[in-house]
Picture 1 (tube, rainbow, N blue to C red):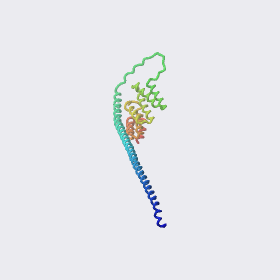
Picture 2: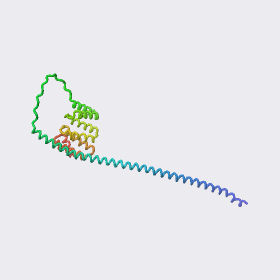
Picture 3: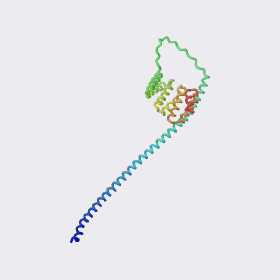
Picture 4: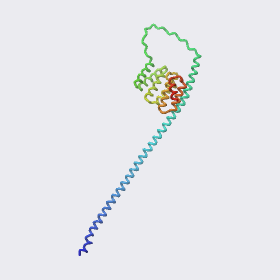
Length: 247
């Protein structure tokens, strides 16, 4: 009697077990579907991120190429400037030598006697160009570079024929050199060299321009300018310093 009843007792248990297995499978399938969805989302986000990163890399490469091109262009420009200017300096110096020889054959005009004055002597006031130069030098000592340049520029503009105009131009270049703005200093020293050919500051302008080239890493133009200095002013103190640089 008991043996016949046993199969019927285990049947409900098997049925419940089968139902539980189906539910587990459904849960597993849902989890798999979620994982697939999440995977696709991650892939999509990764693709977008990679695209953004690639764009940034391309932009960096483009900027780097532009910087290299600008640097190369500047190097060529300074090189051309140095070569052309070196030739110009030599021509100017040759013309000056010819002019000096011609002046030796021309007698200086007779000096006119100065008129005697019975007026009461007064304290002389400094000329406007000298006053502006001194004013600029005082500002330069105090590292007021912009203010110093204003005074020197005022001298050049207001009294362009002044014998101090070359000095003022030289100190404008000096102000930029002191600020370590060597590219700008090179151009300002150049004005002294080409425009104020008889100024006493010209040998120093040669030397300081050569130093400026050296400080920006342009050794070719630096050596060329040192050689120009030695040739133009062989007995100057700056030429002695230049010779040491050329060793």
